Image (cartoon, rainbow, N blue to C red; front, side, top):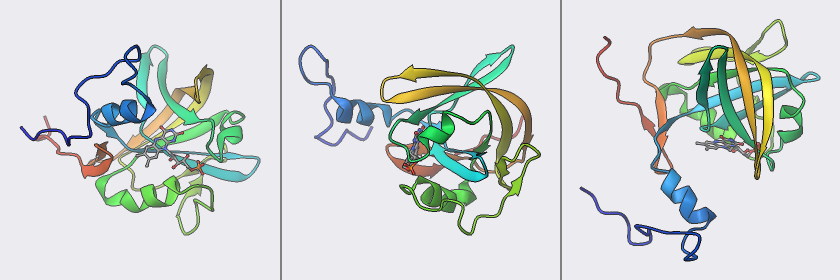
Length: 177
Ligand SMILES: Cc1cc2nc3c(=O)[nH]c(=O)nc-3n(C[C@H](O)[C@H](O)[C@H](O)COP(=O)(O)O)c2cc1C
């Protein structure tokens, strides 16, 4: 087993003063996630954010959640929009991570998309695309949790893009069952 780099403590606690946001971030970086791109448009302005906080929540009704940083340049838009799309990115879509994770700027420059009948930007060739309606929003420290009800989905078979230890990694797919 590869040992941790020496700067990574093996344990920490708030009471002992050995757990802080940087260490928490480093601990959480071992939680392997997919990479999603959430898109919407607010009064005609397209918005998009790369997000790995996505998780499923409920089967009845069909709910998922993701969290948005209060410091995001699109935060106020996300507090208003009722309809949005979640795209699970495939390994061959790493360019979209670079483009949409940049701070501010025109995230959609040069990106091909179509608009849904609710005006939500939909990207092609993603692993999964789901259209959602905001179900609830909850304050959670420096983030807001956005819960969405899933209205529809489309998917294709491709290698998922995953994220662990701060790096993008091609998901290792098992043989289809
Ligand atoms: C792998 C990865 C995962 C991210 N996950 C989230 C997330 O779950 N929620 C969030 O608000 N920002 C997340 N971000 C940050 C945003 O994608 C974006 O980089 C940041 O909000 C700065 O741009 P903005 O201020 O223009 O939104 C993530 C970034 C990366 C690279």
